[in-house]
Image (cartoon, rainbow, N blue to C red; front, side, top):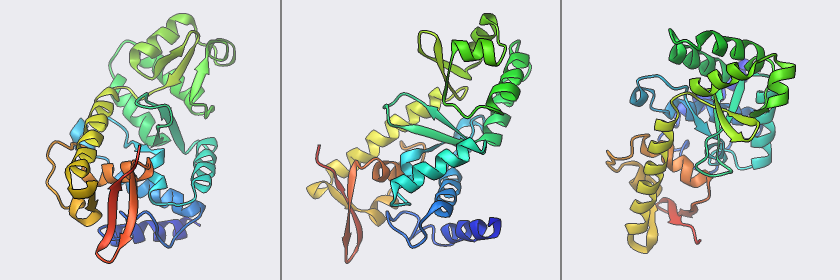
Length: 250
């Protein structure tokens, strides 16, 4: 199984310029979901954030590569339940769920809190909560009774950035320092959509868009092309010249 997944991953790398930016490709099914996740992870610009963040992928970006959304959601939930990935709600819209590999998330969190006063509490949280519970959010009862945290420790976890307030008495699992990513993401998405909106008929060949210079798009054009396709902000129209991206109707 691992060998087959690796072969799929190699296929993405070998056909990166042509295939990986198409909304449809030959390999489908659960294994393709993991390969797509690996490929999209490789697009994350780690150096932009001084390698302080885990490589974040938006769930809907995977939809740009694997047509069957049910297959994507089912496989991601399986990977989450197995403890291999974590999911996060980052707030730029209700349906945008970020995904990171668990080991990468843990290592970046520990680097972030190293030497800080709440480091021990964060380590306890990673060991007792993140390692055993795949939930995307936690309520006060579970934190106090099931995991043995005190109110003061929960406050430390919020201050450390591994929890953010969801509502009274509950918190989202979070990525410390991810605010910078969110700002770059929102700005980059707007910039890419603006490029298409300014084009004739509000459409552009995918190959032309991919090859444009866009220094203001910090996360990279490829990262955002998968975003706007997966979020259905553009329609993909097959033509003899290649895939055409057309701004979707509101």
